[in-house]
Image 1 (cartoon, one colour):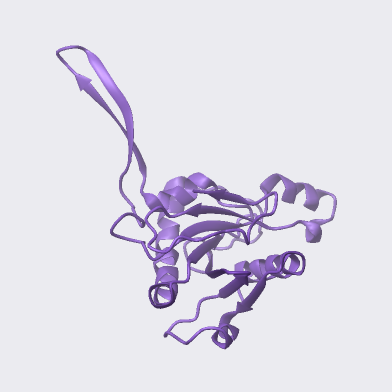
Image 2 (spheres, one colour):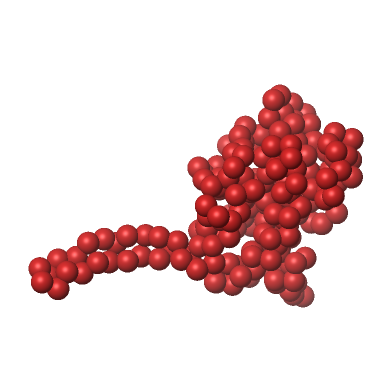
Amino acid sequence: MTEGESLLYQLLEARGLQSGIHFWYDKNILAKLPNLGTIPDFYIEKDTIKLLIEVKDLEREGSFKRGRSNRVQMSTPEQYQKALEGPFRKAKTQLKPYLVQLQIPTLILFFDFKGTHLLSRHILETLFGEPTFDIIHHPLTGRGEGPFMHRGSGQQMNQQAGTHVSAVGALGFDLFNHLAACIIGEESKAQPRVRILQNPYAIVPAKFDIFNADDDEIYA
């Protein structure tokens, strides 16, 4: 079990007792679903809601190397964009058969060991392509139009690609709350949360009532 998987397991265990969440991990999923050639990390049920989750630890994928300490380190958006591409493709392959054949929504969660803080919304948005802004200038009138924003290079999700992923997200801790807990020696009491971006191109959208804690963030 990776660090990210362990963190999500703890989160689901803690919330399940209070909100009626039932979940299965790894091969235990086969007690609920047929074997379609791959085994996602988590399968979740809450009332009529179903969700499959694949968790990717960025350092486990070789995009970042763990240093001698786990202190917070900084990376550029371009580094993160490149780091997410490989894990995203692997996770998409794991989840696709279940979405296609069983119509179960899918979620890819990224865990970044660098301080265990949540990846920002802007980092996650790079999977939809690098934001590019254009301004149209009319030489004859001297007037301009815009700026107009569109998605440029690095697109992993659009109308042709990534449609088998219902959403992407980040798993971790709020940076400042986590640091505060560490300072007072109560790191073990810090509660993880999620930040999720729904994929507007998904062929099977997801409902995220499962993640409804005050600190969770869901973006349509």
